[in-house]
Image 1 (tube, rainbow, N blue to C red):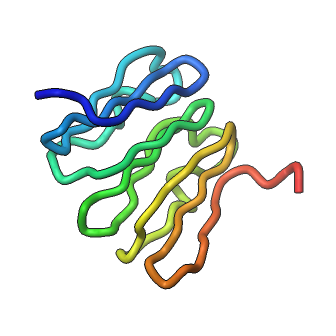
Image 2 (cartoon, one colour):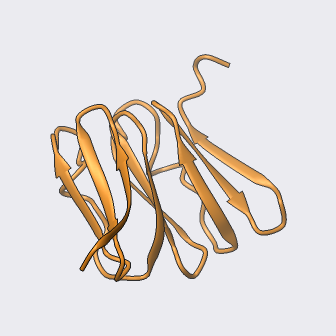
Length: 110
C-alpha cells in the first residue's frame, strides 16, 4: 500500500496509508508508537511534539502518545462530526462539521 500523508513530531513520525491504516515509528518514550491506533478507516493524521491525532472516516478523533503533562488522551474530544485535525507542540485542535472548533492539551501559555 502507498502512503497519502505524513506528519512529524519531535522524535516520532506518523504516516497514513492509502488503505486508511496508520503507521508510526521513532521514539516511544510517551507511547508515540505503542499506543498508535490499529485498523483501517483513517483519513487524516497530525503530530505534536510527543503526541499524535488521527481522524477516522466516521468523524471520530483518536489521540495517543504524550499524555504526561498535557492531557492529550484524557481531554480529547468524543463523539463524531469532526472533519479536520491539527496539532502544535503541546495542544491539538479539531474542526466539527458545523464549523465549531474544539481544542485540548496544554494551555499554560494562554
